[in-house]
Length: 176
Length: 209
Image 1 (cartoon, rainbow over the protein chains, first blue to last red):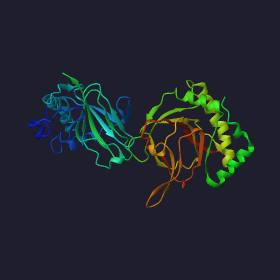
Image 2 (cartoon, rainbow over the protein chains, first blue to last red):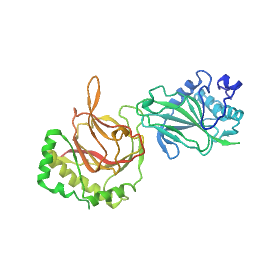
Image 3 (cartoon, each protein chain N blue to C red):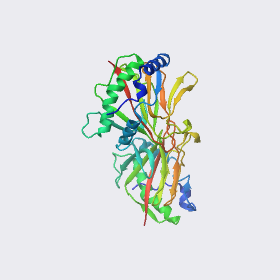
Image 4 (spheres, helix red, strand yellow):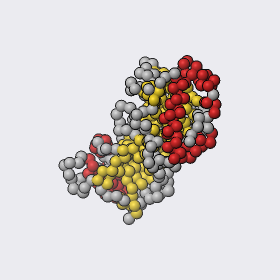
């Protein structure tokens, strides 16, 4: 199992839970998000529409527990992040949840025409790997790092109107 | 059976439309069908299942929902089958009369119904492939919305410094957009639809006879 790659600052001082959406911009240690993004970029994404989520590109990657040289190492970092480190962090924030789909990376790409309207019935984490470093009027704006959506809350990402790309991981969580 | 709107059965009307075509090589006709036929086709269309169609990132990009069929498909609704036969016969004849060209349907008789929902778009292109003569878009969109929400058909002028919209056609009800297809035809596009709307069209090309 790979090492924890959360930002060291979070290990000492977890963020406040607050009300509504929780945004943690510096979730990952330096450079980790970019390396996971590079691995995710190689996945065969397909455009999908989900009634409770929106229209976007998506690929599920099944990542085994043990390192496998056939897969990018960053996938194993992401698996550990989703299945172990993120739930542990949330638990310390007073949100006792675990991964709803251990070992499955739900990778999302926002490309031209993509939009999100996430209204989960259970806690949902979005991990922005690349951010959206373009003008807000292009759409597709989302936070880099962690966005935590409580049950019943709504996260809207407006339609992306240009040929740029943002990569995210979607982590479904369930109470433990 | 689907019928042309009575106005389009009048030779004087066709002559006037042909004169417009000669000047502009691009035209919108409305209404296209008899009113009750448009309602029937629309009712049949919204019963169909559509698949999201978006090619992998590459050269020419688009994203919309499609339902592809031929009038001869076994499982097709009778109304859509009648519409398809009509489009590939009467409408070809109508377009030939307006454009002054000998036109024919595609050999495979395939028709494409497209649905643009929120996020759908069609990038700039000019349709030219050396064989297509005329592009058609049959509009069956009930709703209307401002161009700022996207989803309108836009014709573009491209210069070294700027891309300008030279004509914008909103989604239409019972309309037929026709435009010439040739190598240097201006580009056209449908910018991303930003809101929850439904633009419904049948779109394709007629070929040299």
